[in-house]
Image 1 (cartoon, helix red, strand yellow):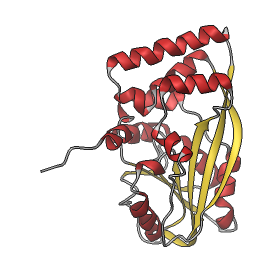
Image 2 (cartoon, rainbow, N blue to C red; image 1 turned 90 degrees about the vertical axis):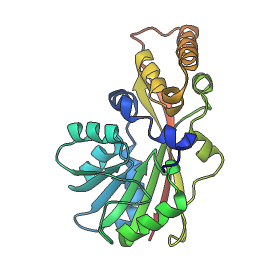
Image 3 (cartoon, rainbow, N blue to C red; image 1 turned 30 degrees about the vertical axis):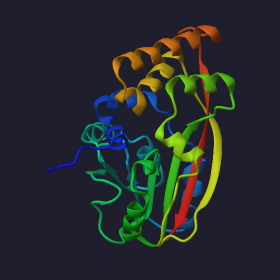
Image 4 (cartoon, rainbow, N blue to C red; image 1 turned 135 degrees about the vertical axis):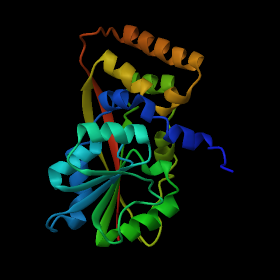
Amino acid sequence: MSMPMDQSAIRALSFGAQAAKYEAARPTYPRPAIDWALEPVRDRRELRIADVGAGTGKLTRLLCEVTAGVVAVEPDPGMLAHLRTVISDIAAHEGRGESLPLPDHSQDAIFYGQAWHWTDQELASREAARVLRPGGVLGLLWNIRDTTVPWVARYMEIQRDSDAERAIANDAIRIYPPFLTTDRTEFRWAAPTTCAGLLALAQSRSHFLTAPRPEKDRILRETEELFGQMGWDTETVIDLPHTTHCFRAVL
């Protein structure tokens, strides 16, 4: 008999039904973050890279600019189906970080974008070590809105903290043995968007996707009230500041 999923698992698999909205609303990643994560393997030829928890392929597309040897792994069938429509020329498999559908010692790097916090981090560490070649790198990236900016702080307060934001704030990101050390850095940048884009971003988050209708209505109403307070209209271009939190471990 199957056990019911806990709330974290429900949120982790909540995105597929809104894959197109996720694709449209979520920002990309800064290229310097990818280059930093790949520094330990930058001299290798024909890199093989796995993007795990690939979603709709936001990070996958940037990795394809680095090498042709990219494979995507995603547990949500809806997200995976969307990824296959936007990136049709790479291998893309359904799978989880704790049990990767990849051979032993087959990858030079494994990336997780907005995804490691959904895993059992100890099991996923061992599985990444199985799949990586000696000296390979595990790179973890999160785009987190910069709440030192007052309007961003209010925007995020309306939406409630996400699992990712809590994990970063509480220093709950772990990479376990056989990885021995973890490097960490941050990149600050801004993604241009609009009021419509900010509304879509709010609707792409797991809290919104799994919330009851009254909570969804509250989020949309208070977000639109914030726009009015800021004096923004539909034509206003808004820079949404981010900090990309980056973790790197070498096998």
